Image 1 (cartoon, rainbow, N blue to C red):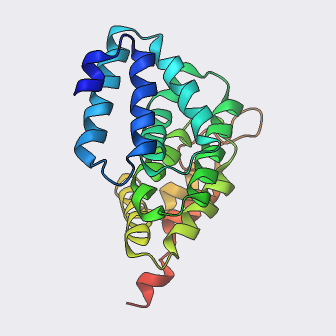
Image 2: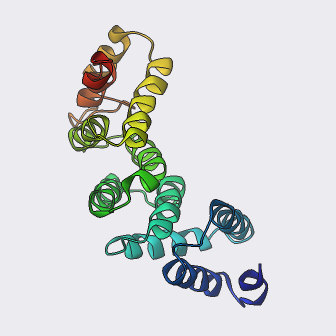
Length: 206
């Protein structure tokens, strides 16, 4: 890719690619996105400090962007790398709420749902995470979407969780475990465990 070849630094490359996403949104394809992500991974392996720059850059971009490609890349970056550089759970909670807000304002939700949901789920596994009710509500809204792709991804997320936690008793025991400060220490506690165990209203109608 010419942009990669002629960018002098990783920061330069990110800036050029984001400009490309904005100016040529309609012609960017999945191959371009995947190639960009591969370059980012390689850059972070060579220079771990670059990870912090990347997370900060996309956190900033996602506060206002409605560009589908920037949302896809930003969700992936934040989902994969936030917990590697951020130690306090409050900051991770803020990132999760940012991702939910980004999805809410995105017009082409079916294009980004497969990127945002995994990021939200992954970050919500953080120890002492305290925004499970908000995540549960987010997932419930997706599952009742009339968009087939959005609904199927939400339902698929539930199925995947079921495979990990195969009985309601396990989900219940997870929900009841708390840390010394009263906050949950589990992967899918409280409301999310309830969401996993529910039968989708749309599925029930089929």
